[in-house]
Length: 330
Ligand SMILES: NC(=O)c1ccc[n+]([C@@H]2O[C@H](COP(=O)([O-])OP(=O)(O)OC[C@H]3O[C@@H](n4cnc5c(N)ncnc54)[C@H](O)[C@@H]3O)[C@@H](O)[C@H]2O)c1
Image (cartoon, helix red, strand yellow):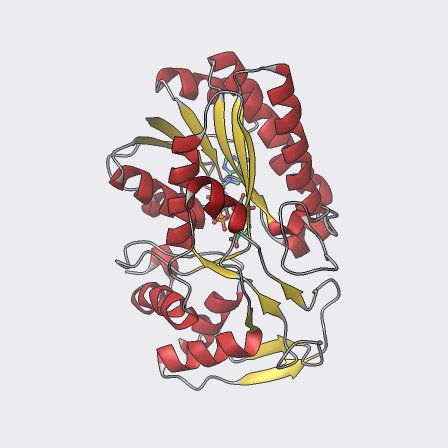
């Protein structure tokens, strides 16, 4: 299949590109490089440096490369930033996807796999989170993605041959096991990279936000899914999409790790006893978030394999150790 990967120069998109190439698909990357890296796109893979909102240019790209399916990762993805700049999030994530879907309609491309998020669920009362858990986002980032889910449903209702899957990821972590690509975000807000930056001495200390949560060790619990497992899921879901399909899946490992557990893993893997301090809770941080990912297992046979937090951290460390300045490392 010929796949357009939007956001393919970013963290998750670049791992999906690697996975698609390994499966023999042809890939084209579309990325405005606002937060992506040219170096993350393998040689030989065309990189179309285009903004999602440039509908004419996206239409031309889809037509020119005779694209069969779109994997849509391109988005802004910082919760805090979305609270400060809500309009940017709605414009880029929601408006950008409307632009992309318009281009797909014009070019006759009717299959899309969309990066949604567990942030669409907000702060659910019951764990684990299933696909039936009510979606009540608590920030503009979550809303910008939930609106896209709604728009996809409406587009599918208007075109019987249009098919989509919205994949609601939990906390994506780790790097390609061969160390070739990895996570390079600026600013970096994800827990494992922050810990690894502390181990590299790039940040003086790590702060745990709240240690009085109703969890086994008092720190927040999250579901960390390895980026390679996530990429596998995308390939499997894409292959399964038939005209008219509307699929929603949670992608997580089905259980959580506490902040303290992840810190212990990072110290063990790196061999560095970096400084950790505790601070007050952050507003909007639920004590526990973890997925029930049985639906995708039941329907498509996908299940996370790389679930050991030490191994996940080890793969991330392989990348960080060899690329202390990300893709700009010599
Ligand atoms: N990282 C996570 O834990 C996580 C969890 C849930 C969902 N997601 C979703 O997964 C997707 C990928 O996340 P990531 O961590 O790889 O982010 P990332 O920032 O590394 O990658 C996103 C890419 O999209 C590009 N982009 C953004 N807006 C664009 C636009 N208007 N036009 C063209 N390109 C644009 C950026 O330049 C970047 O390369 C996002 O949609 C995000 O919301 C991520």
